Structures are given as structure tokens and as C-alpha cells.
Length: 448
Ligand code: URA
Image 1 (tube, protein in one colour):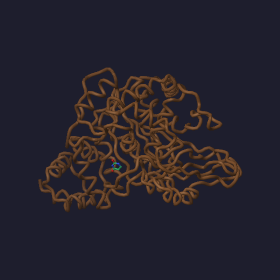
Image 2 (cartoon, helix red, strand yellow):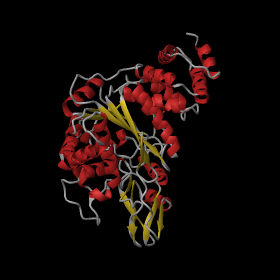
Image 3 (cartoon, protein in one colour):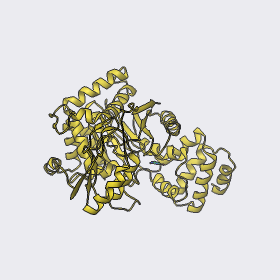
Image 4 (cartoon, rainbow, N blue to C red):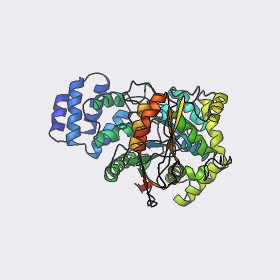
């Protein structure tokens, strides 16, 4: 292969053949293409784009650069969900055991957080003993026996993406739709799925700031998934406010368990409303993802029926038990986990941020909250940063909530009093209070 000639073709806006793209990826992973040439190729792709056939070839070549999970034949469809990332986005935690209880197998390969978006693996690692790194045989075995697993990518899965992503990161070529599509979808295709639901976020704290950009990315991923034989749908969801009432690794696990407990435990009575109402947005997103997958796999005849089925299943308490089963299968110490759950907080310092006036919350800015909790230690500034699982915010007041002077806008969980004090004024900026109740914004703004 003459890589320079291929690179020049792409620079001039010409199309490459699928076989040529496959050769490029194989040679790059084998160390036969120098980084400086690959960097130039990525920049050519960034400016010239890729045609559908080229993106498909790139994605499949990336998937095939490593191990692809192989499952025994089974009546239970293999499904997963992927989110483009947000603040307080703990949807995967309750969704995965719910899907297992609905009769799916869920081999969820997740990632870590970077910047203001949290990562599912970081959240799960706040659970005592929980193992996120499993070899492929263990992933398959756990999925077959428990019905679900949430873990990290093995060293042998999609090595092309690891290498390419690191290079994109330092060459300004991350925000290219075909490269994002190939990166995300190659990892999902390595799970060998029957159906996939994508949660593509837009708004203040999202990778895609506008709905139009999110739609463009969602359409490209849905088309590619379907071309590769995986029934794929995408939800376009609003990320102006955090999902749920908590953001920060352990606090989000705790909230996910609270949702799984809905219907099986009494409301705690700490608030006027029940956990179901307080966690409405989280619940809607979890149930919507499950309902779409039921329709996509023809396990339900309409979205309305499917939503009801998912709702009944959540209420039955079975997903809460499945959660414990998944935790135990992945090495968690359940007794220690339950003791931790019973504690009000695990961070050394907790401070309340209070409203100075009466009215209705009209803004709870997920970007500011994401930045503050990252700086408290919940997130990473670089891939190497160590994170603090216990810090974050909870009891967030959300748009539409009525507040009085002295009402709690949120609680700050910090490692030190100084860190909590410095977060206070920044968090205050995240909230706006108006005299009138704002119109409710739509969480799921479209389906593709
Ligand atoms: N997430 C990924 O896995 N890859 C991208 O390129 C962007 C987001």
C-alpha cells in the first residue's frame, strides 16, 4: 500500500475504496504508518469528510482491529444504550438491570468521564469491590448467566480506536462527524448487538450544543448502525440541566438505586414529593430507552405498550434485585455497599446552598454544575487525573421547582471546607429564579 498516495487522494477530496481504508487501519494498528502521516490523514478527513461507504468501511475496520464479543445463540436479544455524555447522566445504571429483567442480554461496554461529562465506569468504581475491567470470557459468561454486565473495554477490543482517539485528541481532529461516528460505533459493534439505542444530547453541557448538530450526529450514527446490521435508534435529549438531582460519582450511584427502589420502598418524606416525582426526568429517560429497545426488537408492538411494560417491570422491584446480582457477579461487597448507601454522605464536608428569594427555578445550568464538580475532584482535567468518588452535589433544585427564601438549591459534598466554600458562589450562578413558573422544557426532543 502506498499510504502517501491515499493521503493525497483524501486531501484532494477523492473517495477511497473500502479495501483501501481497511488496509490503512490494519497498517496503522500494526505500527507501519508513522503518527505524522496518520495525523495528516485525519486532518484531510476532518476537512474533506467521508462518504457513507467510507465511514462504514472505517468503522468495520476499526471494530475488526481487535476482539469482537461472541455470544452463544440465545432467544434473548443482545442490546445496549450509548449516551454522548452529560452531567448527572446515570441512566445506564438503572437501565441495564431493567433491560435484563425485560428479557434482554446487555453487554454494556462503558467509558470514563473526561472534562465535565461523567463516566459510567467512574461511578461504578465508587462501589466497594466492584470490578470494571473483565476479560472477554468473563463478560460473555456474566451476560449469559446474569443477563447483563457493565464494564470497560478490554485491552484487546478496538485497539484502532484507542490509537486513533489519542492522535485525534492532540491534532484538533476530534470534532469530525465521520470520525466520531466511527469511534463510537466501532466500539458498540464490537459487542455484537441486535439493537442499540443512542442518547444524543444537546444543550449547555453537551458535546453538541445545538439540537441541529445533535440531529446531524444522530442521523449519521443511526444510518451507520442500520447499514451494519444493528437495529439502531437515537433519542435527541436536552442537556441544559443535569439529569436527576445529583451529580458526582457515588451520589449518582445512590440516586440510581433510589430510582430502582421506586415502588418498592416508601418515599422518605424528606421532600413534599415522592422519589418518583423528584426523579421524573431520569425515570422518563430510562423507561424511554427500554421502550424503544422493546419496539426495535419486536418484543412490544407499540412504544406506548412498551413504556407501560418497562414501567411495570421497574415497579415490580425485579431490576433492583438484578442490580444486586450484577454487583455481586462483578465482585462488589454487597454488605459494605448497603452500609455505604445508608450513610447520608461520604464526603468529609457537606454545605447547603440556599435560595435568597421566593419564586420558581428557571435555570439549573448543567455546564456550571459540571465544571464545579469536576473542580471539586469528581471529574478529570486530563486522562491521568485521579478522581474523588465522594464529592459532588445533590438535592438539586430543578427548573419548575418552587422555592422560598432559605430553600436548599443544592448540597455541596467536598473534600475540604475550603473547596466547599469556593464552590458556593460559582454554584449560585448556576441557578436563576423567576416570579413565574417557566414552561416545562421537553427532555426527549426527537427520535431518529
Ligand atoms: N466518544 C467517543 O468514543 N469517540 C469520539 O470520537 C467522541 C466521543
